[in-house]
Length: 385
Ligand SMILES: [Fe+2]
Image 1 (cartoon, helix red, strand yellow):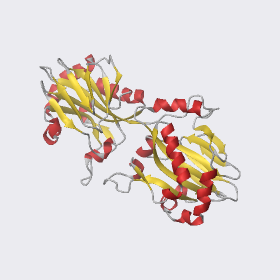
Image 2 (spheres, rainbow, N blue to C red):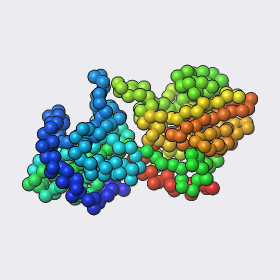
Image 3 (tube, protein in one colour):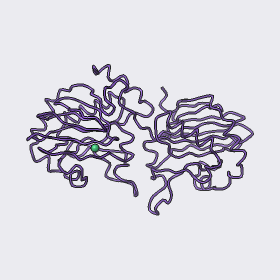
């Protein structure tokens, strides 16, 4: 699997989309900001179908805006819009921005990287509608020829360029998709839970004991700022990057970094990193969370783009009577040493009906771009039952 480009679909029926383009050819010059402001795009013209949600506050860069909306012009392109919506569903994600772009004869999109935090977690795809010469895409150290009717994923976090050798405009559609993991495995007995396996937590418990009670008081932001978590305390080992672009909420912030507390919990941090690698994903936020005796995490949904793009796991370190977890219309009791995936995009709550704090390692994994299928093999290695 190439890490820079992949053909994901071919034989897309493009005639009706091209008819829409030709019927609306005057729109190519309606908004010329892209070719005027972005030097590498100077040989192109664009029709904006879905763009950053307006209004964008003055201090916010549009490349940091996560939400997107259909434009007024999109009404002239019903076939194209519907295709883009269905494509996002097929590849398993939320549709982001969609542009129609044409590249002039013998023209070029000059070498560049798509910069801005909007791009951090999104996959970019191109659908070629028309080219009477060769349409070449060079991304990283891979070069490919794209044919009409083909959809290609490209890694736009590395430098790429495009050329049109034809004597007519080359027309393509740009589609961004935020991948949203779909779980659990089809053969899980629950809709919102999946037991993964048992884990040896002995060394983790030693670290926890060594740090003592004071570690729980180092960072109290979670229980202070999130009302439904007010009966918990936590030790964050990996949290969102502290430098957040203006206008981006914490729940929409993708990158994370280890905290100063991480070095004190090498067994937990090391195990979670290894597990993320095993799933073919990237470890994101990671905390040790304690739910007080006779207390609860109140019903809520983990909302925001950060969560949309990631899987959530719980590993139970200490839970005297088992951890009661409720998600959607299901209730499961997690036991000590068990590792579970669970659906934090559905309404969920947790209860501790015992006189001892229960302690979980809670962490998120972002499946690698376009590699969600790898997760399917995990259960076999994990003696999934
Ligand atoms: Fe939650």
